[in-house]
Image (cartoon, rainbow, N blue to C red; front, side):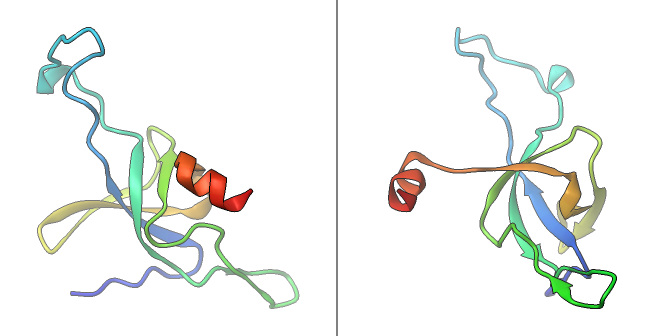
Length: 104
């Protein structure tokens, strides 16, 4: 199945958090919080302003993003748990050092 978000909505797959702390302590599933980091799988075309012009989304497929703890709506697509959220629920895009050097 292919899913295409509408307007400024974004389809995100959560990226699991580490199961150990930096000190080596293993965190049990019952104590873990849901990760607030994810990978963008699909992006809607954007929103329209008051004059009807399309404002494109600033995130793109493949971006790693941070989002709020209670952001989005959980859905199951092809047996996979995913989130659909508005682009405004995304707090920022995580860029690697290599991406930052290329931009400079």
